[in-house]
Image (cartoon, rainbow, N blue to C red; front, side, top):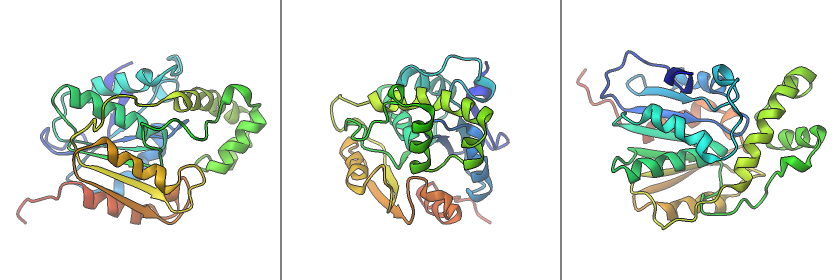
Length: 251
C-alpha cells in the first residue's frame, strides 16, 4: 500500500502551494464514484479523493473496525498539504470532521470544511442501521431507501456480495461514532450541504454542525434526497466552487 493508493491526486501537475479539495465518500463508497466530479470543479483547485480500506487497491486490507481505521491513513497522506479543503458526504462527513480535528490539534486547521448529508458529529446516530442484525435482503432494502448504489449492482449476486461486506463494516462505524469533546472543536469555515427531501438526515440534524466551529458557517439545501447531487451534479458543484478560493491570477 502506498500513499497514492490511500489518496488519489487527480491533478498532480498543479503547484504544491495551490489550494486542494479532498473528497471523502459515503459508507460503502469508493474513490471511483467521485471521479466524475473532476471536470466540474475549478481548474486551479487541486483534487484529491480518499480511498478507504477494503476497496480498490486497498481491497486486501482489513475492513474498518472504527473511525481511526478510516481517518488515520488519510490524515498521514495529506498531513503536509497547506491549503486543504475537505468535503465529506454522509459517513464521509464524519471522517472529514475527524480529519479536521487532527489538523486543528496540530495547529494547522483546514482552510475549509464542507459536510454533506450527515448528522452533526456530536449527535448519537438517530437512525442506526445495525447491520449485524440484518440479512442481506434487509440490508439491500436499506440501501435502496438511501440511494447511491445502482440497482444493477445490488441485483447482481457477485457484485452485491462485494458491496455488502464493505457496507456492513462502514455502517457499523457510522452507527457507533459520536464526538464527545469540547465545543466548538474547530476554527475553520464550515459549510453544510443537504437534500431537501433526505429521508436519512433532516435539516435540523444538518444545522447541528455549526455548533462545532467558531469559524463562519453556512447551510445550502438542494432538491433531492440523501444523494441529492446525483440529480443535478453541475448545480451542486457550482455551489461548491463558490466556497473554494477564487483564482486571482491576472488574465
